[in-house]
Image (cartoon, rainbow, N blue to C red; front, side, top):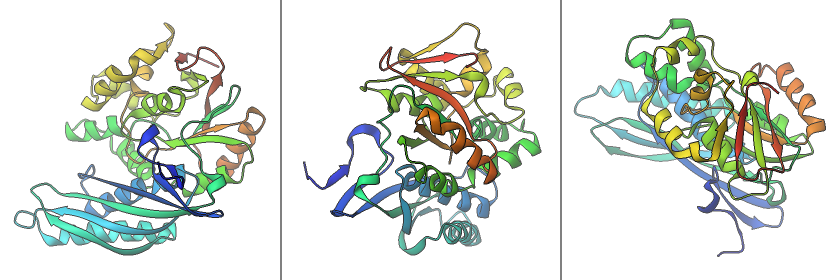
Length: 316
């Protein structure tokens, strides 16, 4: 293995990290997907925020980006593509990221995203593993975007709920990452995307020396999600996530079934999951609230035993 490779394809990390010199490493990531919202401009913003999040999850600063476009030129008006690219560019400008190019292909299905390059000091890279017994787990965004997207498809989504979900997905994780990196004893980080909250927390403990207790009552969830889950409006990805990860997860009998389902909901541009020393968790959460990250919450505790397992508890 290349000795300069800090993070590669092993370990399910959010991005690759390669050391250029003793004080500088680059972060590389790529992500793109099909539209999940109707408005092209909004889709561009969400896709860009989602792609940039991987750099923030590693603790880095996003520097440049390249557009990745698959577009059905024969069946879709080119103005749609223009609006998507405008949304993505505006989000990059907000992030302080320079667009340096990209690549497009003709495809029957529209897809958009970014390849992003970031910078970080090699000694400050945050991997998804590294949490220590006693660390607290902070989640920075509410869960439920996958369920909301499904509700939109079947015409059962409340407009206010949809607006909140879109606002969350298009919000950069940059501010949360900056506050995280200013906190001394952060030991691990990842972001919540397609594998859901429990899928990504499983990655944080898998094969390691810690387990995790999750406090169901502390999990931030969009208002209105429970009614959708009770009405069996859930994405297929939620079921696949649950089937894959349930061997690692023990859900206590007093945990409501609906919130147990939400913990597997596949997210788009979800929040950060931060493992931080217990004596700094409250302070970091407070600073996030003061910075407008209203949903940030301490949602779990890393424990020495049982290793490699998650227990979902009703309360702390």
